[in-house]
Image 1 (cartoon, rainbow, N blue to C red):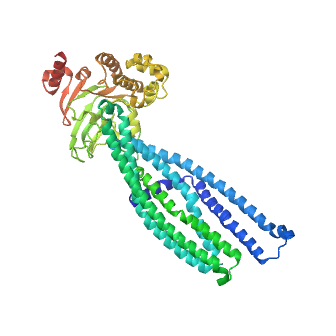
Image 2: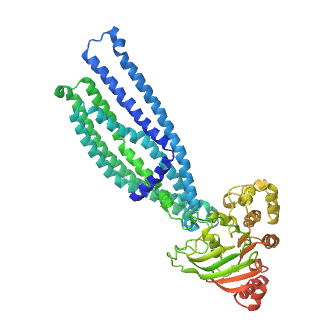
Image 3: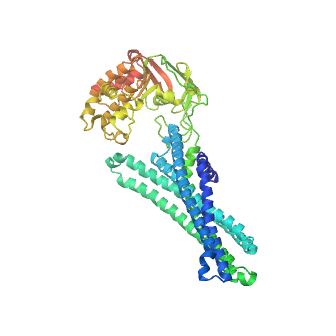
Length: 604
């Protein structure tokens, strides 16, 4: 992982923490107070008691009168220390809860506002895994800071400050060794940062392979490819094992070197404790302080190898999501974007030029055979006008630009040149949300959530009444099959609607578009998954739906568009024919040939 990625991760974490800085600062202060009271003040009071005992002369009946002030000090110190300890726990939990919410919101907003190009290039399962690792890494780092790093820094500062006036030579030697120790550990674990990042990437790839296989389990089983998928999973799993093994060996080696330096510090401390009184006249109480403070300090430094391991692993886990958060939005609202207001529904495509720059094809699927930019122009100086309320059909061979044109209208991608206007408003200057709320979109592959049928139908209008939902289902010819389901409208559709047939899913999606009641309508092969009888019934419903609405209908099945006001035939991103069904048949061009092949095949 690059250093910049680590710094960007800390930037996102720091920005979220600063929104709740009072809890964060209080957590640091009470962590310092906890260390000061329970580690240093306890030892200080005990050292004073040892000095009093060392001077002798305390009889049995004078124990309480002599040592009561020290006993009271110990009670107060421990009481304050325990209060600090509980406040520390409260602050850590509070920061984790608040920042977890903010980070999760940041990730959701970032991912949901990314372009389809971004999502088509990534595993959905890997993004979920990266989200969990990103937020989990923050929680680990927060606990590490409050429970390890702040006490470590506090112990170092307090040891130097409190021992320097008493044994300056010892403190100088200790400081030199600690500086060497920190430098060595930092250099050793700098390399581990890269290994942790590699291990996290391998684990994300494994999650992606598992998600891809499980999501498409029907294709796996019906193709008899279980062994093939297992082989892909095993290869990814082996990469995880190799990456984790490298990380383990590096960590153990680094920890061993760090442990060796701790032994050196403890040896010097033992020599001072043993000879301090004879050589320098150091009192017994001060020797107790040297031992207690140094032992506490080395115990914390002994954990620094584990601390660095956790830091490296956490930053490695967060790296890929950090890179996603840094990814620029290919489609973004203009700073002064306004709300789209549709009054008539006129659409104008004016001299637009567009090409995919990342090997993504018309259907949003990455084409591995096409490097970035190799697809060339999909559209070049393309112009087309659609009148208010006009119903037009887009036909043409695959790759002619039909679906791309509707995606540009929805701003799922942005054009490189030209303009698209709706009622004279440039869609690049309006908010994406207001644009898409004015367009009812039914794609070829129905988009259903793992929710009830009623929730799926009402997705575009969550405030719709049950009667309105039911009416939309009737118009989409979906009520009959819905009422036959055990739970009716409360039936859970399953992930992506897998519990429903293709035709049922499509009718639910059409019902959603009917209920949305947007002034513009885009149907992308919306009847492709229906049998002939269902198609006939839905055609009647769609005819009513499209009345007085500007509608764009994409269809390979030409019977779907034959009764529309106008049919536009595309080829290589250009309009080659434009007219009504009857006009195009008389012209005997591309459309007439397509119609003849389809109807001829049917008759045959």
